[in-house]
Image (cartoon, rainbow, N blue to C red; front, side, top):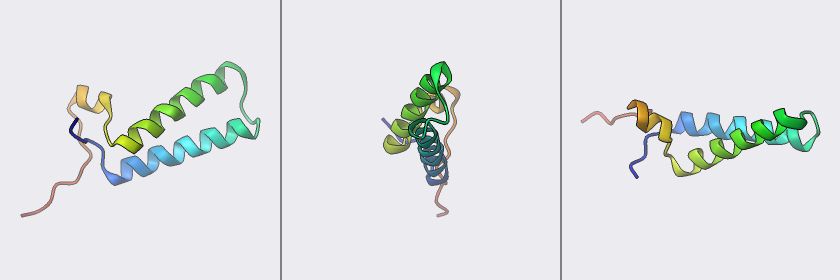
Length: 69
């Protein structure tokens, strides 16, 4: 698959995933909310690592900066 996420996008997703996982591990969130947020964190982590966001592809979004030539 062609990558469609820029560096800033990846870093933000990683930070959000780390914050959610930290809150979960420190028992700041629990129950259904925790389950949903942990799933979201997993999705953010997966998309940040791969550099591909299926929703971006669906809507035609690309956050990779184009080089000037």
